[in-house]
Length: 71
Image (cartoon, rainbow, N blue to C red; front, side, top):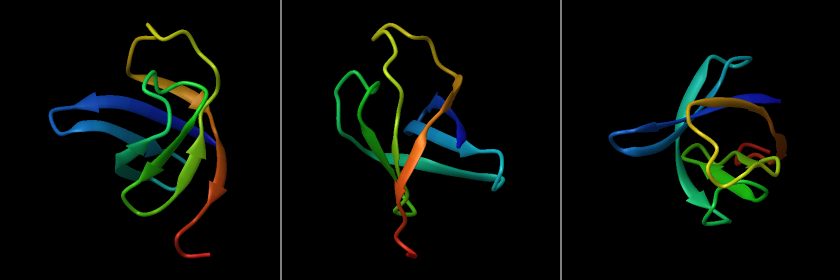
């Protein structure tokens, strides 16, 4: 699923265009962000692709959804 990650005043945020949904990222598995999982405020969990640590934001990436709080 394509998601756009950007940095806001409140921290990292993820926008999912397919769902027209923007949620704060509340948990990051890897300090560098890339190659690990992130959890959105609504409970959705995505695994991000491996990218260089200095990748600039905002960026749209193909992420794999691995769980959903509503499931």
